[in-house]
Length: 177
Image (cartoon, rainbow, N blue to C red; front, side, top):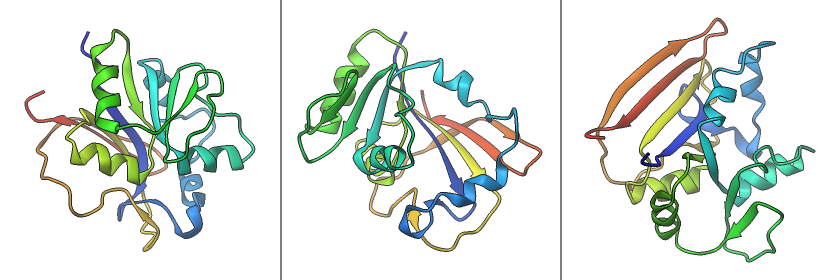
């Protein structure tokens, strides 16, 4: 099995993954009891997670245990820190990390954000699939998912799913994969 790097993330219709001050409140408009939008099934297909330090810190600051501690987790950071169980603070080259992970046997690799990590991966053409949940709101300002200054990348549509609360989930893969 060839491991793939898959971005699984939610964004506003105007392309923001967070409002100013890292406010994620807009995500609550699609919360629905018993509906996880395929997240639990997706997480079963991965055994490694790449996430930025700011995103990791945000999750921890919300009072939660890091949800992927049962997987190999790589927190991408500039500041070395001791590992916490399977959570590794990685200060090396992102492209080298992805290359190493893809060369190993295992399930897929989940990119859990944030925007800086997504855009570094895009610059290296390292994301194989995109599962993007579009929240029906225009937030107007905040942290953009896709930044300017990256190369063009052609994608092929795999599927579109729409849900009762207005969330639309788009699944794309890199063209030619």
